[in-house]
Every structure is written in structure tokens, then in C-alpha cells.
Image (cartoon, rainbow, N blue to C red; front, side):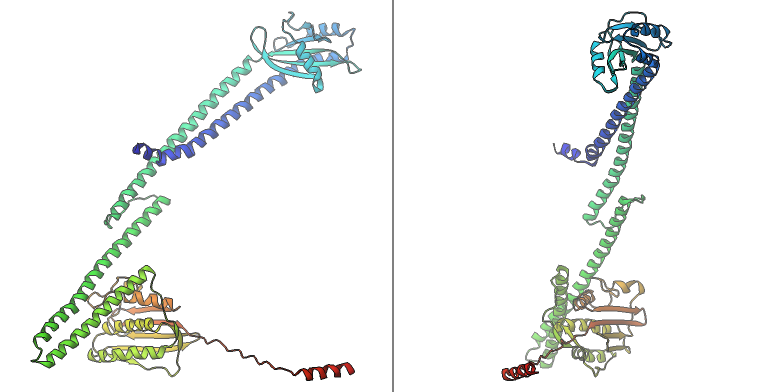
Length: 496
């Protein structure tokens, strides 16, 4: 039952019910219309030809009651198309007077004569069968005297055998052509659908493998159509998933290493300090300093992971936004890294500007960005290098530039360093998500974080933030005029 339902819901069955049946209905409708039109055309042609043959009997219209019979006999004898049609002459009562065949017909024509008298123009044409069972077409034309009174009629009769033969042959041709068209549509449609289904099945098999974790599999499809474009998109998706998987694995490896190092240091120095209690206070103090330092490092890693989790779930938002001086925040962070830079033999230069730059910011988050950028500059700058921190104010914005003379970033990695998990240099400590978090924070402040780098020369990170514009205070002075003065001014105007 399930197989039947699945087959019924397949693309081929849906095409059959939703497309092919419509095509079949349209073809059959056209065939029927063509058959009716052709039949009408054949019958009209027969009627027109018979009417032309019977033109000689229009001369009866000049007859009167006395000579009507004689004229009818004469025209019947002289009629030259006796082998084409039969013409009968009727009196005013609808009885047959004479016939071009010379035989007295047995057909009853009085009803046709009465019907013709009721028609405009006095003509009535009918199709039916003769007394012998032959298919015929008959036309009765009433003849009127000068006063408009019917004095008789002539009736032509022609066989429809040839006409029906033509109609039957044409209908057979129409049916054969319709069957050929429907068959061609069915074969071409099913062939096309079969080819499309084969491509879709290949896509389905590949996507199942991708869903199972095989990101190296690709769909081979050389067609340049919509499905080919979809295959290309799936291949690109698999490539991106493969890159993401690689970065994720590198990230896990890096974070594991970053976590293991401080934990090892904490455990080792903790045991050392414990064994040295009461015997070597200096060693205990050194051990506690290392433990605190590594604990801070662990805390930073955990905060990075939490920030990344918030960013991924859309819960990273800036809070406590208030006017803040960028110079003050930047000075605090620069002071934090001055000693570290000196220990590593690096010069860190920052001169606060004279003019303060006020922005609307979450100071904790913005400080986190400055720490991340300057920390990266110090980490990737070798001994004897320079880290320059500068701040300039431009029209409507403040620009913070952190420039180092470090190892730089390869050209192919510059555009990716703000991606999650990505680390251009895996030999340097770090989780690889700091810049991604920093970029998100700057975006939420309405700013930009730009990175320029040349491998072996250094890196420049530029942060642009909009300045805070204080709202103008509008002070309205209300001057109250005494009522007495207003009255006096009114009286003075009245006297004038």
C-alpha cells in the first residue's frame, strides 16, 4: 500500500494527472472541433453546389398558376445536371408534379414544403434518409407569384454518400494524428521525466551522504539548467560544510590545547605550592600567581566560547549603552598591554588625543573588542617589533587604528579571518573566534571593523564608530504681559 502511494505521488504520476491529461483533453477537444468544422464545410459545399445546379428552376418564378405545370415539365426535360442531382417540382399543395429522373418519387415532401413556407426566403434544407435508406440532403425552395402568394416549389435532392466518405476519411486522419500527437507527448514527456528523475535520484543519494557526514562527495551533472544549478549549489554547500567541519575540528583541537595548557599549569603549580607550604613562601607565592594568571586565561577562553554561543543563537546584544569616551577606554586597554609588550621586547605606542570622542557604547563590550585587537597585535608581533595604536576624529565618526609589524596574514586568508573557527596561524595561542565576536559587537554599535594585512610586513585593523551627537536643548522663554497693559493698548488703538 505504501509503495502504491509512493508511486502515485511520484513525479511521473503527477505529470500524468496534472499535465498529460490536460494535453489529452486539449488534443481531443481540437480534434472534435476540427471534425465538426470539416463536416460543416463539406455539407455547406454540397448545399452550395446543389443550389447552383438547381438555378435553372428559378425560372418558375415568372410562371402563374395556369402555366406553372407546363413550365415545370419543360424545365425538367431540359435539365442538364440529371446525373448530379434530382430536382422535383411541387404544386401549391406540396404534391410532386414532376421529377428530373422521370420517375414519381415516393418520398413525402409536404412537411418540407410547409416548413419552407415558414422560412425567410422560402428555403428549407434538411439532411436525412431516403425511402431506400440512402443518406441524402434535400432543399425546398418556395416559388411565389407577383402578389407574394406561393404557387409551388422546386426541391433538389443529392446523395451524401461521397460527402460522408470524405468526412469519414478526414475523421480517421484526425484521430490518427491525435493518437500520434498524444503518443509523441507521452513518450517525450516520460523520457524527459525519467531523465530528470534519474538526476534527482543522484542528487538524493548525494545529499544523503552529505547528511551522513561525507562532505567530500560531489554531484556530477554537466547540464546547464535549473537542476544543474541546484547541483552546483549543493556541491558548493558540501564544500563549505567540509571547510566548516575542518575549521570546527581545528577549533576543537585548538581549544582543547588552550584548555589543557592552563589546566596543566594550574595543577602542577598547585601541587608544588601545596608541597611548599610552610617551607618556601616565595615558591608558594609564585605558584599562586601562575594559578591566578592561568585561571584568568581559562576565564577568557570560556568567555570567548560563551560569546560565540550567544552570537550563533542571536542572543549577543549590547547592553547599558551610554555616552562614553573612546580615548579613556583605549588608554585603559593600552596600559593593560604595555607591560606585556615590554616583556616580549615589543614597543606599544599610544598617545591619547587632546580632543575627546564621545560615542554611544556598551563600554564592557567595546573594551572587549579593543582587548582582542591589541592582544592579537602583540601576539603576532615578534621581538623588536612595533604596535601602534592611534585614534583620529573625522566628520561624524571616530577612527581607531591598531597597526603592527608582525607576521601578517596571507592574502588568501585576509577575507576569512573574521569567520568563526578560522585561524590563519595555528602556531599561536587563541580560539579563532575572537575577531568574529569583535566584528559582531562593532556591527551592533553601528560601526565597521576592517582588516588589511601583508604577509611578512604586518597587519592594520581599523575600527570606525559613529560619534554621539548631543541633542540641542531648546529653551522657550514665555513672557507674560499684564492684563492692564493689554487693556490700555486696546483703548489707545480704539481712540486712534
